[in-house]
Length: 327
Image 1 (tube, one colour):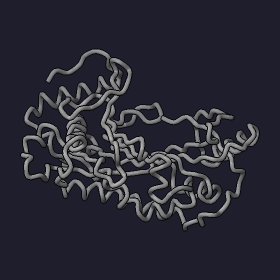
Image 2 (cartoon, one colour; image 1 turned 90 degrees about the vertical axis):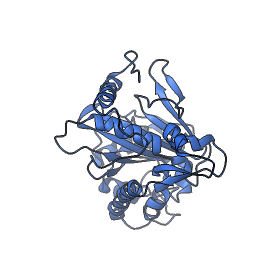
Image 3 (cartoon, one colour; image 1 turned 45 degrees about the horizontal axis):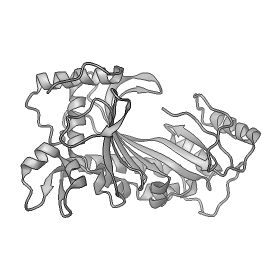
Image 4 (cartoon, one colour; image 1 turned 180 degrees about the horizontal axis):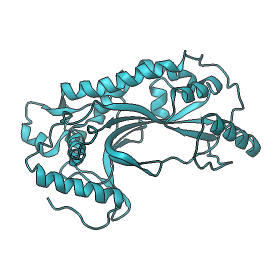
């Protein structure tokens, strides 16, 4: 395999080094099946949540609400005061805690949920110097993951950001894994799944890099999942695993009488996206249990947020918001 040497940013340069190490130290590594044995149990969290309000607001109300929420949630970030969008205004909270979510639900139950990100992270054991295994796992998950098997998935496409031409390009099954984020996106259904090495958080280097698999649900997907407003968040928590697990579905082969294993080893799960109807993914039971356990743990922790709020409840505070930057 020929590795690129130009048009790389710092993150891609780091991953390129890991790819070279992997090819050198483990030339016979099986990249067609996910291996979680070198990693700690998967970790999980809500990475961010965005809620929106109607557009009938004033700049002074917007600023007041932004300051109130920012101070209450201890948000140390750059706010763009007075910002708005065509449909209204919104606020994004990164890494919300249980108390953050409880505050938002208690005070803004009728606000629309327009964006939710669920992250599942794979960390190496403390002190491990085998960081190239992160690149190995990224290649394996890219090869085996099948978010297009989700019941709500429609025109899902796989792409990556090309650092040379500075735009997104199709990530074809026959291509080597890119050094940037791999994205599976369905704009119609509002689903987006990303796979990337996490080297920075809020612009600062993380203590130890790890691999993140992240599911983003936009407004339509949140509504489909039974969470049109913040007041419905507890309802979503109850079905979190059943709704999200298929997006993290990991395969280990095909189920189809005319397809042999050579196609799987060469193209992986993404081949199903454009292949004839009837081709199915053979699930990897052990790995799917690991992802399912992570989603179950997230659901258990989020049940502490509180009881469900009636769907017709009104916001107790001013129904306004603000645009925030996000990383």
